[in-house]
Image (cartoon, rainbow, N blue to C red):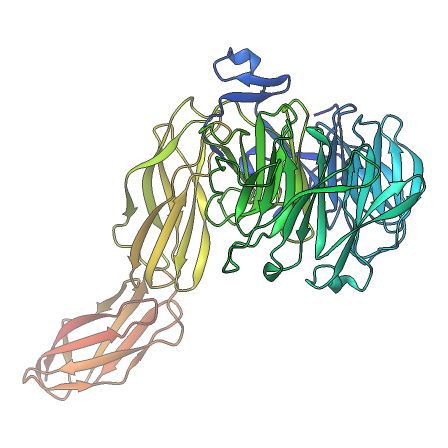
Length: 602
């Protein structure tokens, strides 16, 4: 982590980390998935069966990025740096490329004259190519200094894609026509190459934004895909041979069937380390795995992303062993899967769900990149708005199962509105005991919506009690979740539906045993209630029944703020007389009544 970690400044629920200050965020997100056949350690990939001392400590460091939008990320293995641009739209003036080390600490920046968007690294890692609004800049990665610039058609709004293939630099261009034009299906996107200090049109263009990808597995191959053109455009994917002076198009493919279904919604492109496979992050379909030779579907596909996830990013590790698949998902649904690159390997992926104020909630498009040896995965997440984070992920060597066992019960058996209710259960954890007590999270869903309930610590024997105070009458469903920890996968959610009853009330009366008709009857009492406070201004119904069975209603009794009240009466008949005081109840309280018998004498 480095010798200095600065202060953590908390504002409300969000902790803001400035510069290279980091927040260790293991406890803030669900980490899931079965054990990979190997562990991703700081010295490379380590077998699960290896001695414990050889496995790196699992970790995920998260740095808050000082950007409101995301442009591109490039991983420089030779110098152990990660470059990030913000891809600002509709802006001008000086900007910068953010520079981080492999620990996730910010170590510098590269100044640009205009907002920077796309980036690409030369095959030897010596030169970083950065696109800005009017030029393609080059930087020496060893000295971090600018070494040159090539003219590019002016584009201040839409940003560019940049790739290096065949030893040459390629970039996209979306002619400026206002920020709303960038993602319109009828826009025009162009592909250019760099020659010296000039740019040259390749003659290739399309409607919709273009995405580019090139990789060391096939250094002469440029992959281009159509994005932002809408589902009716039936977006294409194509490859080019960039080894010669001009691009030569190879196979291309569109994905909609004869009925127009299945069109691609392209978010990212990745090439395998051996160059034989191309993976596409398709928000409409998931992760498509293709044969690079002809873009046909690979014989074996990756398993589907979790239900509710939309693919946003894909990246292969440089050693060829792993693939990372990013997604946009809600709640505890996985946003990131790490698994063997070979889809025939049935090992269950490691899964990460980003769902906290210090994590982001989704992986951004094109937001994944590996260290060449597979020891680290770099992921950029966002909260769906202006918040962005850089994660440096070293997945744990192994994870174990967890599960809720038995049935959930409540104390009291009949929950009452406004009164504490305890939901009792048991969580079972396989593998080693956690270093710190784990917690069970819960939410309550009723007619008013969904409300988060305070998490409960799990005791050493696995028992726990989630406490809540329901605030409305009727059916309420509690969903309990264990989101996992560094060594345990999450448990399958369990639910319990209860019927929340009105709170009870009670009336106490103090009355004389005897009274005269002349002196009258004086009764005092108190109205009490469970749960929420009783409303003010309550009037109690009072009736009198004489010895002949005749019942009459008396003047109602007003209840004071402390619940006390009094009843006064001048009875007209002698004998045993029954007084009844009753409360009709309210939206949150049951009604109640009490009686007192007074003997009336002459």
